[in-house]
Amino acid sequence: MDRRPVSQIRRSADGRIEAVGDPGKPWSPRHTADAIRDILEQGTVYFVPWADGDTELRVVGVQQGTPQLWCERRPNARVRGRGPGACRAGNDLHDLPTAAP
Image (cartoon, rainbow, N blue to C red; front, side):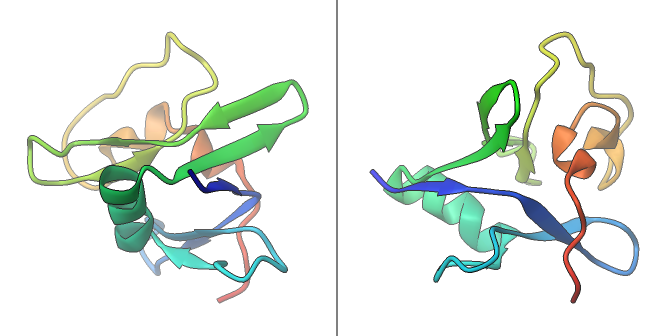
């Protein structure tokens, strides 16, 4: 099983996370659709190495047809609303630095 640390994200013009990465890694950056496929089909583990411990990324929204990467450091965070920005309230991936396009 491949383990890939994620230390930054790349955003689209409307603020959605479109790629994850870790500078200097041969797989980085990785488009979110590809990372989702890696997780679901190959068992690849993407994780954020926070100072207080690692948190694995997971895929949410598959049953609704809108799969998204999700990283939740705070176990009690809630998803509010619907649509592309709905996960933003509790998705800790948004706390990572944004990489240059």
